[in-house]
Length: 121
Image 1 (cartoon, helix red, strand yellow):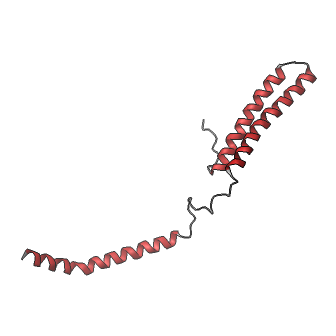
Image 2 (spheres, rainbow, N blue to C red):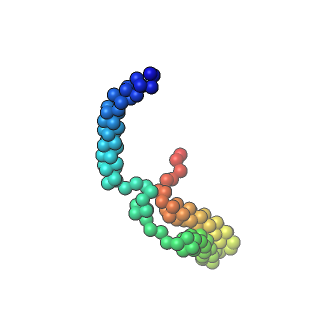
Image 3 (cartoon, helix red, strand yellow):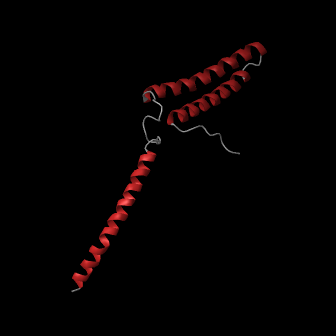
């Protein structure tokens, strides 16, 4: 007896449930169609094509070594011309090392897809 009345109630509400479900599916389909034109962050086409990991490592290590060598050359040149024997070389090697580290950080961040954001004060 209870089963018969419950079965009649479910059958009576079924067309309205189907209509509501149908309307929700149509809405979802239209939203998906609208958002399909926009590129997402996970699409491989939106990310720039990067070289292999080994080439990237060589490039970053070269930038670090180049910063130290340029700093050493400037320091050595200043030591010879100004006569301030070890101080120019010491100061500019440290400055070249700092510049090389900054270049490596910028290069690694640029290759990862994240924009460079300077530290906030």
